[in-house]
Image (cartoon, rainbow, N blue to C red; front, side, top):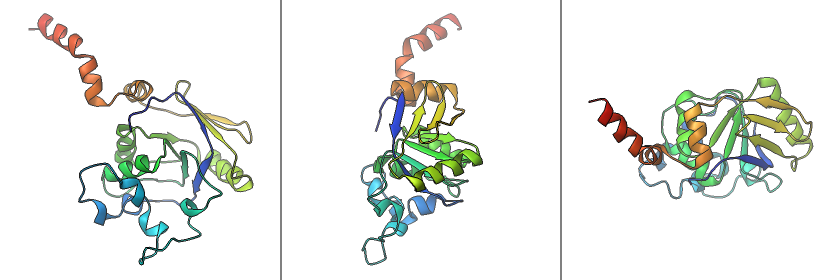
Length: 196
């Protein structure tokens, strides 16, 4: 799942629901696994499938009109428990970016730790994205991490988004926290030698 970020341009999957919690993203019965593999298959499991395992035809992830690696979600995405498995499921499904007007803090950090970029925009911009996707499911959004901008290609409108500088560096270089420490081992050892 480690992939360097730069500029991502993609069609979007719209999920215009507010207060989507981590139990809806990945139901608790799937939390026994400790390996990240296979979680994407169960992303939004109870919305994508009926209890008998048949597909819920009108759920957006089952609609062939929508696709791409950007999920556009309603306000307060990732609330509820702190389960990292929710971010595993989002990444495992193939989403690289989630756009919302508000993220629960722990979930936002879990996404960053799993190479999914959470992009927080204004409510007005989010609603414009939903309308643009409704008008044309093939419209694209450009997410430019170096410039920290997100652009609705249908309207040309852009917004700036915030990201922690350390996490931005890690995403742009394909580094997790351990990779970063290993890459800076020599600097750490030099600092220790000079500060005994």
